[in-house]
Image (cartoon, rainbow, N blue to C red):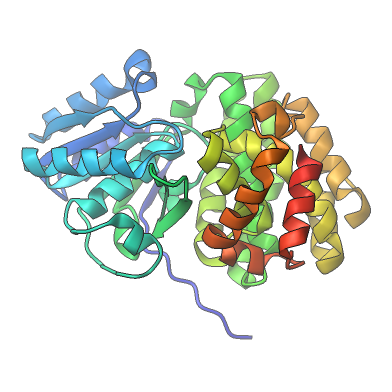
Length: 376
């Protein structure tokens, strides 16, 4: 047995730990660019609280609130320009996965020149970025626990990750209490995304013993907690489990990567800016149906954690969960048409080659087209 696992991230987990933001930020700088969304952290009061916590430690701050769902490369450039002009020496991302990914990209672009696509496609590399602190407010992407920043190229629709150890957060403050302001529809989407991260890391051909342990525990925790909190937001223990499972998923994919489900979704949301979790909901059943024969024992393990018996009812259990989450959806309902299939297929092979090769069954171009059409 030989494997490698390296992930230098400081996770500070627990209810109420947002209060530590100022003292942690003080270790890394004196002026912070706070990257956040356009409204949610303002409405909840979290943004004002964060600014106050920083001020208490004599840290000044500038707010960048231009980040959209499926963050664009152009948005990251804009944030980096603001950080440089304001003399910020650390970046704090407060929000969901899009916010955290944008914050990571901004930290990278603040000290690296050139086209970020060159770094995304490994034409150039750098191990420099401003220090990053992350405060997730959704339990989905696990971006607080990995070295990825998923961006969509505003010019051509390519959706792909910047991957760099320099953008691993110096500190991630993971406070389950901050998750409870999510609307149920958002919880459903991000929760299913977290489940997919854990399932896909476990199924990946480049997984290893530690990622198997992490991802299976993530699946178990989500199966136990997501249905509970979707029905009852007051279940504090379930919120803790769901939030922890999301972080585990982010950690697992950092090493094991994703498989064809995410690989095929990225072209869809890159093209049509659809909600990532909804795209995954449409694609996971048909992708898994086609993949079971490549790893029957692993699909059986996932099925049992979801309440099933073996690999043959794994997809049935997933569909059952999707219905419970009101996520029983198709790509056509998300605005994708058959005329988009050829472009998505070619884009998938361009931006998601690793995810396709990691899948238990490696899909051909014709397989991808057929599965996209099935998901319509």
